[in-house]
Image (cartoon, rainbow, N blue to C red; front, side, top):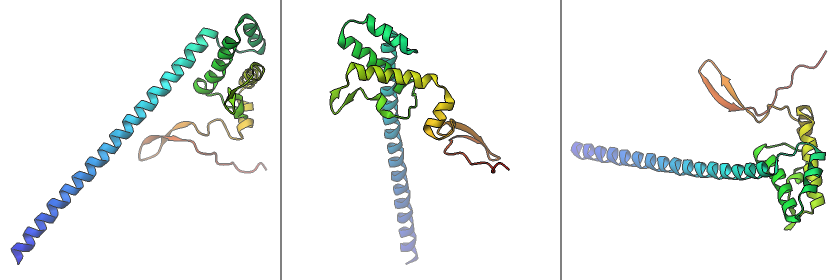
Length: 175
């Protein structure tokens, strides 16, 4: 009976070790797949940013409303004007990550139909004006301080690590 229980204990231990290795292998495989998916996503993001950047290099980055009108007057084809306006909008959205109050400024179509040149033009001008107003206006627009949502290095007695700023603790009331 003692020998049977010893054998049974060994079998249970070997099954436990096998199961533990199996779980570890599954976890490693899942982590590897997640890493591959993340790499693909990053490559796709870099590819789109590169495309938007090359488009803006071709048309130039418009920084003043009068510059928008001047460049659009030079371009003769309607499709080329549309492409130029779209490139400005997408570059500001995807590459510069410009924050705006109204997300509709980034739309280039509505209900499956392309927006008119007039609407795209006004959206680009609004984006340019919003960009030139500065960070104080951005704070008012979002209703949160600029560093909320940014990554920051956290230092504690135990060590350091990167973290994301979630919110700001309000100070004492002014007396």
